[in-house]
Length: 131
Image 1 (cartoon, rainbow, N blue to C red):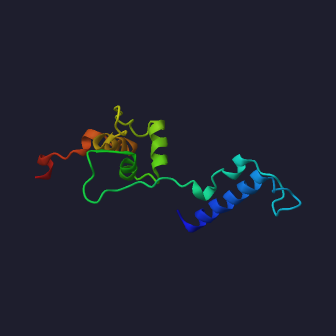
Image 2 (cartoon, rainbow, N blue to C red):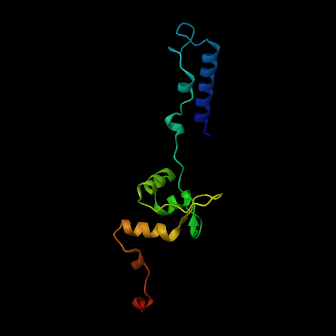
């Protein structure tokens, strides 16, 4: 937690304490109105940070969680990647009881190829073409 986020939480705690004690009114406080608790604890814009995608050091794993999948697809955040999964741009993950959702690397690469108008099976090079 950053210093500014910590200060924000301390200020909100102080306002909540004043509100609960009844000391928070327009005459005896710098606050001009009573704030209900839900207003006191609403997350600030600076606290609503997206989860950053991750890129491995070395090779990409065959199956990956949402943070690595977001990194492979180049999405700006995990949340942006998951929204595109819900829209059908990227494939749904493999879901099994007791495990995290996982995406297979070949399905993600095929989805990326389709977005660029390429046939996924055309990506594999034929060794005869290289000779």
